[in-house]
Length: 200
Image 1 (cartoon, rainbow, N blue to C red):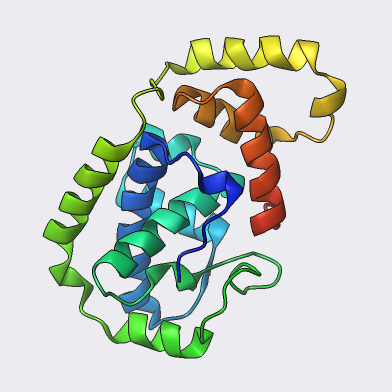
Image 2 (cartoon, rainbow, N blue to C red):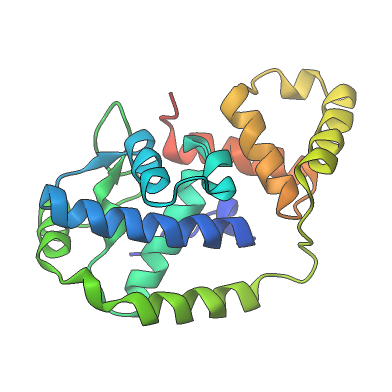
């Protein structure tokens, strides 16, 4: 079951790049922890251990993990694989997002029992196809110009931006770096906070 939402209308290269790394982290965790859940913060920590000094992962934050997990879920669905994304859970509930409607225990057991060593070529091909499908309008930007763009937007929309915390800002800048305009980036993070709720 792939969750399609307003926050997922524009898949970015960042969603794909982080998503690929999360597939690796989740399949590593699936074998080591025998299908036990892993919260978003620990999942990102595990991914960083597997990909040390990775600038893409260094910028990744929990509030932005939803679109990356949808990439993981879509990859698994496209190849008839158990849904790795079900292992990723919010830090408070330790459950999948509210939109998840599957049999969680059965899905986790299927993930734990699967031989994930066989998916490398499938993952590489899927990621290549996904990157080719990213809108040409989403032109990546460097961090500094993206930060400047966000600050200019913030200065002229201070009231609308009162809710934004440190992680929210980081994900907004990540999205601007991925080619999304500041207003859309802010709205995407707002939706992500509602969907995946637990970002602390």
